[in-house]
Figure 1 (spheres, rainbow, N blue to C red):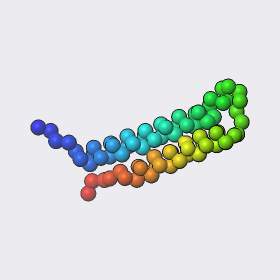
Figure 2: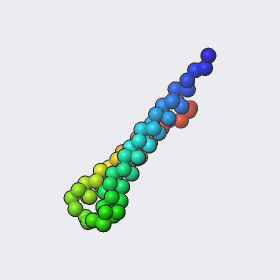
Figure 3: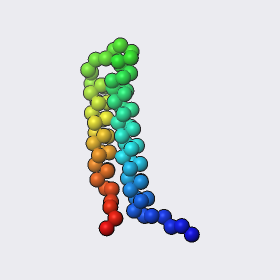
Figure 4: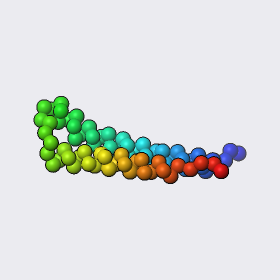
Length: 73
């Protein structure tokens, strides 16, 4: 019977959470810049700034989550 590696499982879950938040950040960044750029209506308004700040915040949280990766002793 194989047993799970608790440390490996923990680290993979941490990486999955960080990756998910990073993917959300890319989505917000795309919505803030790429969509208006393609439509030809790129202007710096409150909505664009809000999406940009949200993307940066999510990316920062993803970096923070990666600090919870653990090593074997």
